Structure formats: C-alpha cells, structure tokens
Image: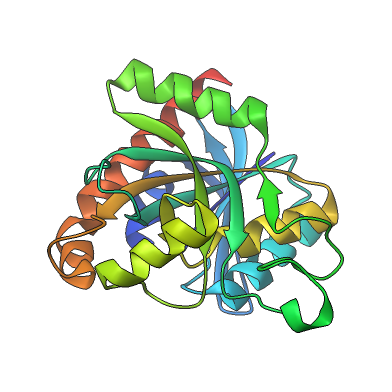
Length: 229
C-alpha cells in the first residue's frame, strides 16, 4: 500500500475525487481515505500545516495501514532565484531548520537519535517521480528541502535558509514526515510544486494566487506514478 499525505485540502482533493474509495476513517481530526487509484492500493489524508500535525498524521497512518511507501505531496516556497513558480521539486533530502540543540554538542538542525541533520529520501521512488515529470513535460529538479514551523514569507529569510543549509525549497511538513518514516523504517519521498518565488512579490500573496494550480501539477505527477509503478 502507498500512503499519500498533503497538508492542505487543495493538495489532495483531486486525488480523492479520482480514487475508488473503499473506506474512510476519522482519527484525531484527520480523515484517512483508503481505496484504489491507478494500479495501486492507497491511503490518503490531509494532515494540516506544521510539523506536529504532519508527524501525528504520519504515525497514525503507519500504525493503522502499514504502508510500504509514503509520498508527501503539495506546494513549497522557492529558495533559489533560478526556480520558477510551478517547477516540480523532488526531495533529495530534507532538514528541519528550526531544530536546534547545538549547545548540547549537536550539529545545526541535527535531530536527537539521528547521526545527520539530513533525512535522505528513497532514490527509487524519487526516480519514478522524475520520470513522470519528464513524461508530462514539467520542469523538475532534485533538491534539499528545509522544513520548519513557520511560513517563510520574506526574501531575506529565504536567502538565509539557502545559505545555511543549501536548501532550494521550504515547507512546513516534509521534515517531520521524513523523521517519522525513518523511525519506522518506511520508504519516503516528497514532491512539491513551487507556489512562491525566492524574491520579488510577497510570498504569502503568491502562495494564495498559485496554490490550486501548483497543487494540480503535483497531483498529475502522483497520478502518473500510481498508474506506472
């Protein structure tokens, strides 16, 4: 079974609409919808924004459905001036930029119980995502994602994340989902369609303007993957 997690309704509603639903369960405020989409048995949910919401949802999904793979889908903010709105970003790895226990002898953003600040995504799933983006004619890139409990709105904040962590995408959930998957030994990948650029217009304004269409691009890639895995 493949688990699919998005933070916002816009990021998952089109997948739910197209799947053959077998069951729906509400747990801790999240609706877990299981069924078939493409050639795959899937379970899909909207976790809500932020790391705690994402971690709780991921843990529940793993405990109840035992997915072999979890794919995080949605939109993200660009940290690179060379990226454009609607570019498809495929996570190579992800860092939780707001996790800081450096005074205790850890590396910047290194999470307790892990040797590295960076959670590495599954290469095989990521390659399948890349293949689908090329098939659909989308511009796509592998990148490091930076996750934290803050909407990064200003270009100077985006520049800092890029300089400190070498990340090209920021979001509020991927790192938490990756950490829970790592703890449980579940294969994980993330796809984010760029909704707001690294500089220029206010990030929140761009996010609201491009959320639905950016989400659609990511959804179409997910659907193609499910038809061909």
